[in-house]
Structures are given as structure tokens and as C-alpha cells.
Length: 143
Image: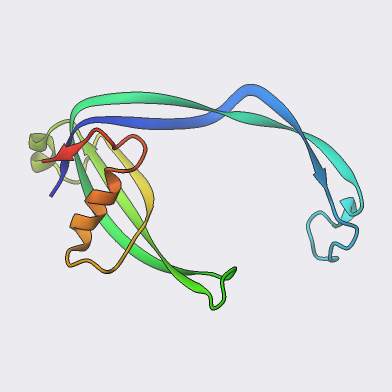
């Protein structure tokens, strides 16, 4: 299993543009809070805005190199709801031949997190289906 086509790498970085935000610190912060000295105050802070750019890679071969499913609990529900998260290690290769010649040396390797259901027969097949719904992976097709 793999995907092929145009992959759009989404690159997020701090921009030169900033935004001023107000942070209100409650007066009842516990003594061990790292912002204890700011309790009961409002502080203005400059934060950089996030810039997004896209780098398109055409005719690539995309492989899920590793799939890990972890469980967490949403404590805001009663009873707490179990949530499965798929942590994927993705390898992007220039071609299927490049992948076959050196599987351990992708052009790009990245981590992707997806919500994951365990009610399927083939976890990798389901992971590929969900991956194709993620930003940057939408135009890829099954190889």
C-alpha cells in the first residue's frame, strides 16, 4: 500500500507580523504556577502570527512507514470518552523506484496525527484512507 501523485507540504513558521494579545492572570494562581508573580494582572504580549506556505511535490510516492495508535481520554464527558489517535510516520519518495532502492532514505519524513477508529480489519488501509483527508494529502491516489 502507498499513495502517489502531488503532495503539498504545508510549512508553518512564525511571520514577521505580530499581534498584541492580552493575557489575564487570575489572582488565585497557586504558588507553584510559573506565572505566580503575575497573578491578578493583565499583561500585553506581542506574538508572531503564523505564516503558511505550500511546497508542491509532483509524482511522488508516499508510504506510511510506521503506524502507532495511542489512547487518550476526553475528561470533559461523563463517563470519559476513549479517543484513539493514529501517529503516522510518513516517507515521501521521488518515485516508487527510489523507495524500492532505499526505503530508509525518503526525500522527506514527517509525522502526521489523525483520529483513528479501531473498528476496521486492516489498520494500514484505514490509515491511508484517513491520510488522504489531511491537508496536503488530498490529491494523492492509491498507488
